Amino acid sequence: MLLITAVVVAGPVHACTPPERPFLPASREDMRTYADLIRGDFEAYIADVQEYFRCLDEERARAFIEAREVSEEYGRFLDAVE
Image (tube, rainbow, N blue to C red):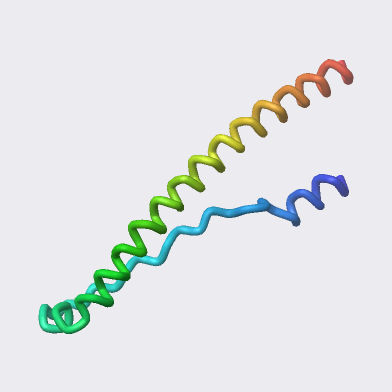
């Protein structure tokens, strides 16, 4: 029981954090005034969201491996107690 609690409390080593959505002003005038800043925010978002997708793909692959290992361990457990 203590081991399970420690694992749950520790949580994932690396969590994928989605990027913050860029702000787009409603006014065309503000868009023109801050065009360089807004463009930079959108380009940074696109780069960050691609990194986020890679992180999710890596986490999904890691979770599949872990689930397979846990399933095998559970099978060994069931064999041992039956």
